[in-house]
Length: 417
Image (cartoon, rainbow, N blue to C red; front, top):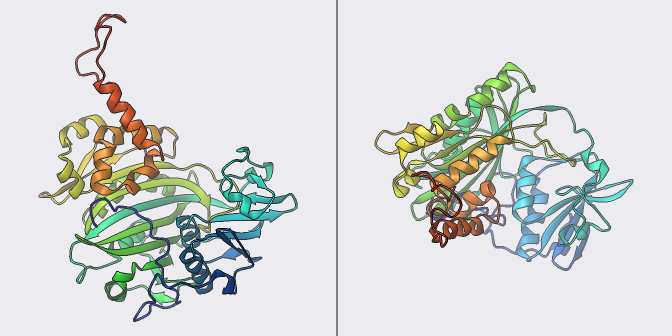
């Protein structure tokens, strides 16, 4: 992965066919959204598609709708009924293009992101709105289970010989036990998983930034779903894995073990390819792993990995991190990575620990090494302003002198944290 590119989303780059093409369509090909069979209405800067299906997949037709809408400089709107759900792949693709999902019910339209009622579907893009969620947005969700979600960026140095998909396969096997996977570029996926075939397709389609969909079930009978994005970089190629697995009923032994094993999961990942950064989240969600239209229970980070390139480039103080955060050195002895545990349960305070770790590591330096897209989802969109404010506060002279507010600070106190 090129420096500065981790976790970057390339929403307009997916191919448009159901099976891996030998020669993928150029991702910048433009199709008028008004001519798409899935487009029901168009307006200034948006194209709307309605569906009554109970489950919306990233089908070939819907992929073409999203790609053509983005190519035309518009944003997609999906409108469904109150009981519909989206697959992980469709939800990710829609979000990456700045699209929205709106539900229509007896009470009118509702933006599923914020839960607010709106007069028209296109009003979901309006900057000014009442932030209060509608009462129906907080109704109990469908059947739930404990989920472990992993977002990882992996560098492949040799793009012509890389085993694309190996990290995804490893994570799936570890989380659901010997996962039987299928894959494709659209849903439903129909190609039996095999690293040789996936790698061959990845190498052939790499210049077109392929976006693959993977679904499967483990020996435990539990489901796993993922997306795999590939693209060439100056250092070789980058894989971005977004994977969600059902690890068992909430409060059960299997779920508790999976949550507690998050650091070990990342330690295993550090041995596969060259991970740049990875984070594991725990959450309680739908048993079908779909995105529902109502408010979801908040998840929490469980562990974070900073890969060997970041450790080396930033010169991270490993001994200090081990002492302060119980960090573990993992991976290759000559090029170590670090894993920092953030909590072994789904608790809100895990976010505070994650922030503490990231500020201790210097998020500005991390963003320079790994990419702004790797940091912003973890610290929020205003993190650079906060970093500048912290730096200014740390460097400002104490014009009143050390005794103005009582005893001087103890040596080693860090105002920046």
